[in-house]
Image 1 (tube, rainbow, N blue to C red):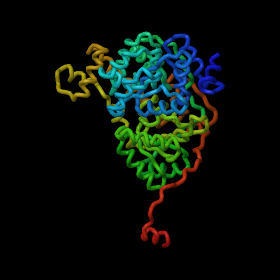
Image 2: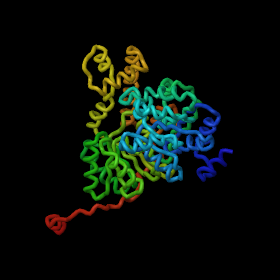
Image 3: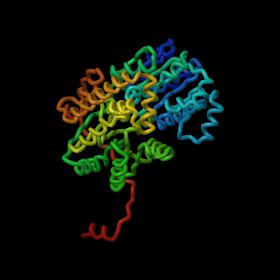
Image 4: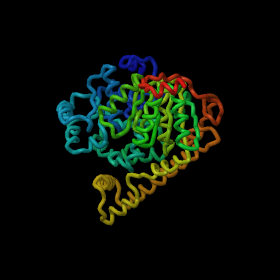
Length: 457
């Protein structure tokens, strides 16, 4: 029985919701697409079959932080034959791993890394029982945008055509499903769990201006418990973290331009509760194994329901009451419009490419990648369809801002789920209260004699 194998390899008595069904599909020999809520233990779904069959696993993952966190977790559980290989490693480290690649049962890398010919030659020497597409929604959301390597994942699945493909994600629309099937050229056995996280309450607050928003936020973080605050830019990340720090709270920042060591340090400090508040761009938190995040605040709301559900799902993985809070000012619409229309590749760029205009090297390379998948005319149709889908998703989130009905029901309807929750739901249902979990001030500021005089008088 699978429960016996679970106990043998992981020490657990029972599976989490959706794990057993997914694993059984895999052991039955199917290519599997499993939609499990954030924090539902998706990594166990490929680890246990690998232990049972002894097969080697290639995990294609979107972020270095996600790979490193999963590798660290596996090592803590006693797994020695696991490795992540990526661009943040030194040349010597990568060479050493490549020289011993066949020693590892679990190998993590990004799509960009494995497509490099001088890297792929090492992978070609191995056989894989399973190819895991972690955060599989990225194939659809990023593959036709700024990371076209995701759209060419079939280079890997075709080459290792005897390997089973396991696609795992927390959110999936019919459009995403169609993209994943088209990109991988596989037919999947699908298991889908409800997206609803009952322990996460939804709140939304409108403000006249950013000053009001900041004042509310600085007051709220006093009692928000371990908190992630998502912002739209690196600049805002630094500005807001500085204000929070001045209020006396140890705060971390996280964005794509930090170096590898800085990002890793921030993650570890947050996981260990050495810092309780992180101000971050959307890359933070994907796969981070922190169970007790109590609050996720969106200083700027995301431009799609998929992004929003993914990001608020980083709260309350321990099953205890948590909250998702979105903030909005009228000026935010300018920022959101820019983000929603900031496509990696659009129809104008394709027309310029067709007419021989000089494009920057990265953009030109990305278009050439996609032309390996589609003829130019078909690619134009695909990019137009992508832009229309993104606009539809953005409009959906704009309505969320001014919504008068149930927020939970509205968001999950986007994914075809009809949810009704009678308690701990949302501000519009009027059955929630903000959490009160004290965050201790730990930053000691030096007091000048002028400040002392102000206190006295």
